[in-house]
Image (tube, rainbow, N blue to C red; front, side, top):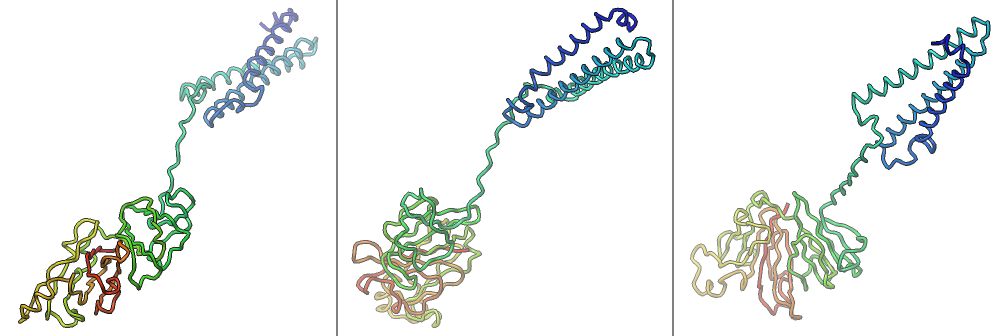
Length: 340
């Protein structure tokens, strides 16, 4: 074959030119603007780089073959130059054979590695990190703007700039709040009923104090319960007078447990006293909080809304506490929540 080509130098030149031109044409289709010029994802880019590398290798092999062919043709009587030209052509052909073999091996292992039509990788939307459970405060009632601040404990004053609150819960914590119209947690005043639903809520201009409590889904672990007495300091006097206990084990659900019941009586209590103080609604004497509980005591407000005071600890004498509006109305509701 080589003798034929050496004797027919015109054919050899034509063969080399066509071989080199074909390789350049094939490679130019892939590498004109770089391996990743038209790719939309990393996978396609890697495939393009592989194709681009094959094209460059083919060009190098073609150039080497052409140089070897020219050297061989111009070797004349020089055996050394003739041998060098033949070796270069053999090496170029061997390189192309190895290049083709590597392509076939890669395709056999995994066709995706050499498939330029590989599908784009699916876009994966990153999950938003979970928000910290608690209460978020907003300047707007719809909670669409950036929150002003966050808290998971009661506050003496939330500020007049707050018009919306957002309750954020998780599996371990369900929060509830009571909004007060005036600042200060130690004083009674106009307030709203407990807000328990997760999500955004308008403050309705109740931007004073706020009670924040986390409801315990297992009330029995909060303590014994809350006991009410008809007499001031009844918790210190034991069973004398009227009393009743709201047990933690009876606090089911997370909407709050009613705390108004008829008194139970121990000892020799005359009927007149029993008639005058039938329940805690008419005779709020004292209260013993036996564990971790949030107690909201409501009465009617002169302005037509609700008046309330909240407690998390025992009360020795309710007459000394602002549980009713100016002392001119009676207690209308008591709600208890077991807390974490």
